Structure formats: C-alpha cells, structure tokens
Image (cartoon, rainbow, N blue to C red):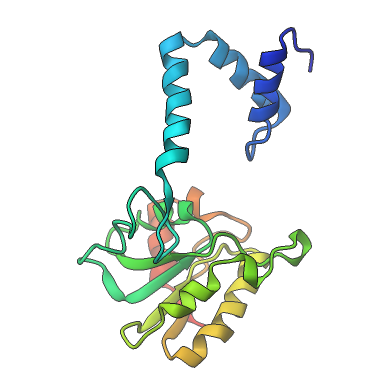
Length: 198
C-alpha cells in the first residue's frame, strides 16, 4: 500500500497487527484517525495507555480486571459451587448474557493447539486445579466447539475428575466452529441449560 507519510505508514503497520485487521482495514482506520479532531485522537491514545496501565489479571480466576481479586470473584451473589472454564476473558462477557447463570469463572488464556505450539503449560490450568476444593461441585468446560476446544475439554476432564467435582460441557446450542463472544443470549442460555457430563 502506497504511503505518502512515514508516520502514517507506521500507524498502518501497527494497526494491521491487530487480530482481524488486514492491511486495507488498517489503512482505512489510519486515515480515519488522521481525520479525527486532535482531542479525539488524544482521547484514543490515552485510553490505550490507560488500559495497558490499569488492567491486569485476577490472581484467582485470571480474568481481566482493574482490581485484584476481580469483581466476579468477590461477588457474594455468585454460585461458588460452580466454576465455568472459558478460553478467553471475552467469553465471560458472552456467558453473562444468560441472566440466571451466575457461576465463578476461570480463564485459561487460550486452548490446546499443538500446531501453534500451545501446550498445557501455556494455559492457566494449574491455577484452575488449585481452586478445586470440597466447595466446588461442578466445573463447566465452556471452551469453543471446535477441534482445539474439544481437545482442551477432554484434557481438562481427565485432570479434574480425581478432584471430585462433576465435569460438564456446554451443550451444542453453539455452532461448531463458532466463538462464544459472538453468540446471542438465547443461544448461550440454551447451551448452558443443555450442558452434559463429560
């Protein structure tokens, strides 16, 4: 892509590193940012810096949060006998669309993917196992319904079983190959209601 400005070219290059943003989209975004009022551009830059400065991981569930432990882990209204395991923090936002479902969560930080070099030690599995005491009756494995998500679910099931809680998998209300963060509330609710023991 032709760039008449070195700084604009750098912005395009950096934006194209974002997931789902190709070179053309990065170019459109860069030109949009260039047309923004200076105050808007500063607000955007400050918001990015603020997120990097203030947002971290909860030491209990590995969710993103500005406080530690996170608001979900400290919420007394949550069902503390259920831990719902998800791949990414964005999946929690999707699951929270099911209004009557209020478990604790655990964020793996990805899924098993040997082709991408992601193994068990690259995920937040040890911290999940450390949370499995007598108060936990059920672990819901809510990994995405694709090959890697299924492999991760089966692997977790083997590890969790000796600790005693029932291990369930969300039902197939979600399309194979789909992502939790794009599912609507009704689909999420049906998937949770139809979960089955692994």
